[in-house]
Amino acid sequence: MKSLNYFKKVAIAAIGLFAVNIQANNLKITGTSVDTSAGTVTFNIQWDNSWRTNIAPANYDAVWVFLKYQDCADKLWKHANLSVTSSDHSTASPLKIDAVTDGKGVFVYRSAIGGGNISSTSVTLKMNVAAANYENYNFKVFGVEMVNIPQGSFWIGDTTNAGFGISPTYNYQVTAENSNITTSSLGTGNSAPSTFPKGFKSFYSMKYEITQEQYVEFLNTLTYGQQARRSVANPDSATGTFAFADASRNGIKIKVPGSNASTPAVYGCDLTAGDFDDLNDGQNIAMGYQSWSDFTAYLDWSALRPMSELEFEKITRGPLASVAGEYAWGTTSLTYVVPGGILNSGLANEGYNSVTNGRANYEKLSGYVPVSLGGATKVGFTATGSSGRTSASAAYYGAMEMSGNVHEFTVNTKTGGSTFTGVLGDGELSNIAATDGDSNQLNWPDNTGVIFRGGGFEGASGYSGDNSLSLRISDRTQGAPTASTSRGPSYGGRGVR
Image (cartoon, rainbow, N blue to C red; front, side, top):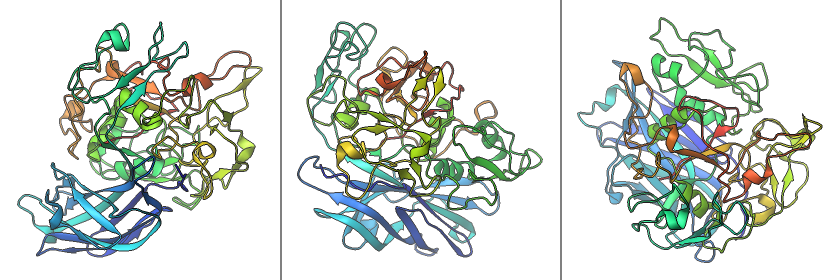
């Protein structure tokens, strides 16, 4: 696999009476307009370092595009359904558009084998909003970079003592999607019924972990009550109040306070105190401090879903045989991140001052004192234009930070999670008072069905300890959040579809 230059993963264009183009480093959505009579939205899309290949890893990158609309009467943001017929949408070479059966968005990707930057290309999407009055709506167009995970067999577990988190060790090959994987293959207390998402069939994974800018854009479409549940500080707190914590490189703050328990706040990124949303305000840094409830709300809102822990291993390892103790880049090479090694801190091109195989952001102690970064990095921070898979610390199919940075929420194969069937988010959240702002997907588990995979920037103990073992692909020793509302500095992850 030729590694790519992995950078930013979200772009948003908001349009009302006039167009406002919000650009991201790697993905840009600009020039948005709406044809109210035709019920279509048109915009230009571009991103860098795109690929489609028929040799290993035989996949492609894509952008998951979805729309939100706001009725000027009630000011509430809702999810805009799109046509489920691909031919109702249009674009130009070198792109194509795939509609999805639930109409919650579309995938935009290369139409033919090739690689390189996608220059600005026009896209027109046909909306399907019931009883639409498009003239009275504002719209926001969102794009999230994804990687395709092709259908095929893969291995879970390896031959280390951790194996699949059980003893004796197991190394099991998943060869079908609708099979029933029993305790004899997964270990005592584990099972994967026929409906559990196993990762055999093709699906898409977010290329990067959810970032702080993505979470800000999510917050800014919620009601006051929903914002209160999805952050720590009250939405009516003063301008400049940290929404979560002044720690671990989290820079989300209240930009404009909400009021009267009804007018929602406006949030922004302000890692380097001063003006909001400057170029060095950490927009691309992975989002920590998420609870399971926060995480699933974001995924439901974006019409994605949580991944299973079996899918986590498919994304990282691909079809290759297990390597004992391997990390997401397929080897046992590992080097931690030190604060002084970070270049262009907080900027969209944040990176590291030296290239080495297996660079990852995890916690390392010396005399009980942390010598590692102590916070999240920009997503894709290890990759350069010339790095390979190991030097970019990339997973097999091109996803980044599958080992290290933030601990990734996944659905486990134990009693609490094994009934999960992979139901997708519908773009809407609960508006019932007791659960306002929560995911409304009843089939998604609570925290008892969750296990952290991939390790993160915290978790070491001892005089000179580190948490490097938790970064291994098959490690299952990291446990789960103590409650669905438990937030930790390194709790985060990514969605799939």
